Length: 193
Image 1 (cartoon, rainbow, N blue to C red):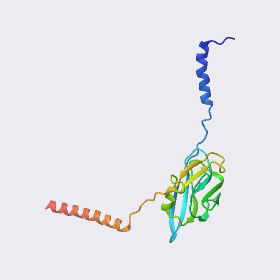
Image 2 (tube, rainbow, N blue to C red):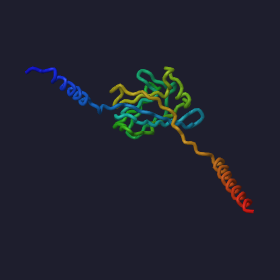
Image 3 (tube, rainbow, N blue to C red):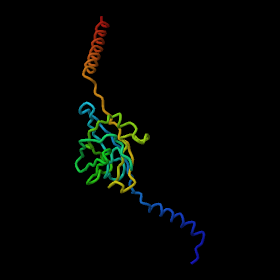
Image 4 (cartoon, rainbow, N blue to C red):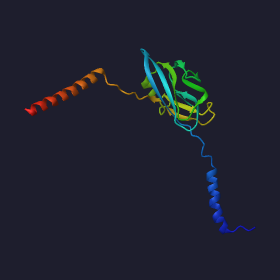
């Protein structure tokens, strides 16, 4: 059977389309963000609580804080390390914390309760590590076990706190509104005369 050029012009685009469609479009992407809150537990000692947000399309099974492959970033060892349910913490070489999940943090979900104490201040966590381009709070996540995939690098940042007005501000605002209303009423009474 002789294949004609005319037939190839019709078949080649269809073969190309078939190749594109057969690519696994469901391949997941690993992506995450993390935030931390801090509370001064005693002078010079801070309690940190990290929240890990899975923003990718795969599960997360490892959260390694203050670390990139080959380097631990905390200059002092964390203490009183705690884990959320289902996670296990390991302090690595004294200067990073590796949390492993017995299940996985599903895509689109968040987990808090990654906690530790440290004499590092919040400013020091945000500051440069031994690698100046990477803050101390630089971290890695993996889909499963550490090094089981290329991983994803992120930086934990301070959580945004909503500011609530002080009671004095609320009282002054209410007083101002009340006086404005009273002044308007007084003006209306005088205008009628």
